[in-house]
Every structure is written in structure tokens, then in C-alpha cells.
Length: 324
Image 1 (cartoon, rainbow, N blue to C red):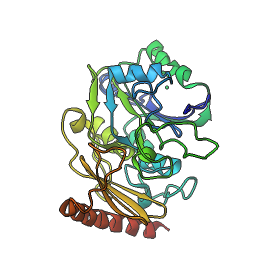
Image 2: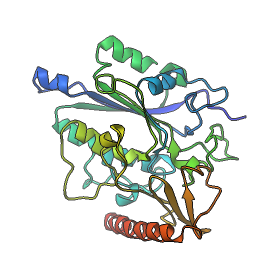
Image 3: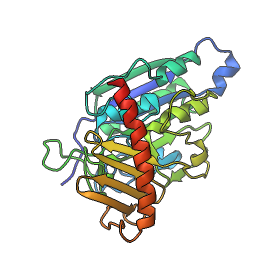
């Protein structure tokens, strides 16, 4: 029977306590908190229908704010995904391609440095083991209430990748109906819980079925603060506000895995996957478990997506070579 560990590993990025700004500027800009769980599968929440796991605080966030039904970690493991949050870019662009491998290059523009220039004080807490899921992502929201800043705080929640794979000593999570686990670019390895609340802006619950990814945090936060993205680099993430307000994603999401021997090109409906086992095309809306390969049936779509993936991958790997 699948279950979560008693202790949940969590990291929290806090951008708040504005300094050096006029009072009216402080009121117009939110505090920002990014919470990221470790190895929590898409199915490991009550709001996603887990048969017995209780996640009342995550369920409350889902009822009050934005629920991303197709939220993806930028990689199938922790360190690269966390790097994507800091940079808004695919991890292979800056050399963090595996867990605890590589480091953030000085040439990268980190989200923390950008918001500091905008007047924010920043903090990072975790990974750490502080308590159960139900007690913590509640204490945090209660403390925001007690400080009187909850309404003007944009609070995000996701996981860094899917649950540990079958046979692992940590195989305790659930991807529910999705195939694959952590380290796999199948849906179960990269589709994770995704939530956001901001009472001052999000007045009623919103459900998003469009694919979104951890690389989107960077441009979304900058858009919120009225800051332009740097023009001297490629960003893989995009501003999510148009999607939250009813639009669709205007560019696919690319994924690389296992030293770029595996790759994915994700559109709104179709997912193209290239691995040593071959090339696959899935209608991810109708077939989220990735059981029916449509590569031959929809050859024209597959060919188009394959070409786009190849071009994107070549650009990413060029940057990887430059930083190594």
C-alpha cells in the first residue's frame, strides 16, 4: 500500500519584508513564498484523490486558489528542478544535470538577486525535516495570518519530482494513474502537485489544465513585480498569469534526462518522447498513463514535434558545453 513518509522533506524560498520602499509600494507588491516538497508524487494529496492520505492544508489551498492539474518539475530529480526555479531556464543550460551535480554558474541570473534589487529581503529554508505534512506547508499559513500578511502573500507549492521508484527503500509515494516514478520522464516522474494562493488577487478557485513547469516561477514572479526578463539569454519558462486568467501556453516545454539521452517535447495535448527504446507520441489528455503510442498514426504531428525538440535540444546542449 502506498503511503507518504511520516517526515516530509521541504524547502521554502521566502521573498518578503520589503525594505527601502514607500508604504504604497509595499502594499502593491506581495510577499512571495515558494514551497517545494521532496519526492511527493502527483497522487500524494487528498485533493488529487488519494484513497486515505489526508492533506487538509493542501486541500484548502486547492479550494481557495489555483490548482495546476498538469504541473511539472523541470527534471525528474531534485537538484536540476531547484535550479530551474532559481533561473527560469532548463537545468541543462547551466550544467546542473543530476542530483548534487554541478553548481549554479556566476553568469546565471538568480531570482534572489533580481528581487533583492527590487527591494525584497530573501531567505531559503531546507531541505529539512521539521514535521508532518499536515502540521507544517498549516503552521506556515497560520503564521502568515497572525502577522497580517496572508492576503498579500503569493504562496506556491509543488514537488521537485515524482515519488521514488518501485523497489527503492523510499518507495512510499504514489503517482496515481500516471506511469513512471522519480528519475523517469514518464508522467509519474515529472508531473507533480502544483498549487498557488494569493487572496488579494485570486478571489475564487481556479483549475488549470494547461501544462506548467517550475521554470515558469521566475518569469511569473518578475511579471508580478513589473520587472523585465534579461534579453541576453533564453528563458524556457514563461509568465503564467495569462494562463491563470484563461489563456493557453504559447510554447512547448522541453525536458532532458540521463545525460540528454532521453528527451520530451510537451505541448498542450501531445507529448513527444525520445529514448533509447524509440520515439513515442502520446495524447496526454486522453492517455495520461502513456499506454498508446500514436507515433505512426499521427506521423505528421510526431515529425513536427521531433524537429522542434531537436532544435531546442541543440540550443540547450550548446549552452551546456559552454559552461563545462
